[in-house]
Each structure stands twice: as C-alpha cells, then as structure tokens.
Image 1 (cartoon, rainbow, N blue to C red):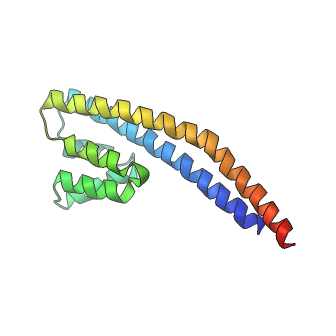
Image 2: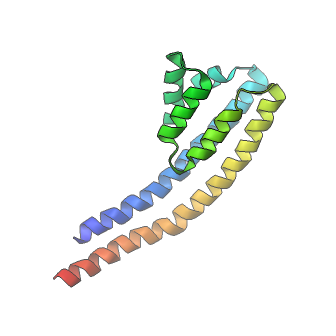
Image 3: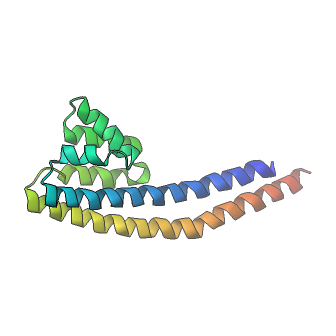
Length: 150
C-alpha cells in the first residue's frame, strides 16, 4: 500500500520534470528555426525536417508533412497529440508560423521564444517546488494509509 502511494507521488513528480524538458526542447527548436530561417532562408517545412530529431512533436509533424499534409494541419495534429497542458500555446504558435514574410517569421519566433522561456521558468519552479511535495505526500500518505489499515 505504501509503495503504491509512493509510486503515485513519484509519477506526478516525474510529469513536472517532463514538462520542463519538453519546453527546453521546444526552446532549442525555436532557436534553431530562427537561425535556419534567418541565415538559410529555409521554408518552414524544411526547418521541421531538419529539427525532427529534437522532439517527438517535430518528428510526428515531419512524418505528416512527408505524407503530403499541409503544414498548418500537420502542426495542429502534432500539437494536439503531444502538447499536453501547452497544447493551446503550440496551436497558437503554429498558426503564425509560415504565414508572413521573413521579418514576420523572425518576429514570431522571437516572441514565442520569450513566451517559451517564461513557461520554462514556471515549469522549472513547479518541478522544484511541487515535485518534492508530490514525492513526500506519496511516501507519507502511503505510510499513513498503511498504519490506518494495519
């Protein structure tokens, strides 16, 4: 019983860490995408293909693009599948990507990089504060439950 409660606490704590890692990956993608668009003049489709190994979301999006799905639909499907609590953020990002000229694309990427940095800071704070709390609640809750049932 105590082990089950501990496992639940660890699982919830792990989710917080996964979100922070996910946002770190998205931030790396934004930085690389900005460089490739600015200096390589790459279209969005090619940027997704070149970054596909960085995140599962990008790999899924690239596979949809390879199957002939237009970028807005491929991005939407990817964001809905892998976005978690950041789904709307990713959907909004995808709506603006590839829809303007070069300067508009760069401004869009810079804006979302700042927004992602803010979300990452929040996710790391949650991971550090709430992650420890979830682990402790799992352990102590499991011990308390075992004592009550014993």
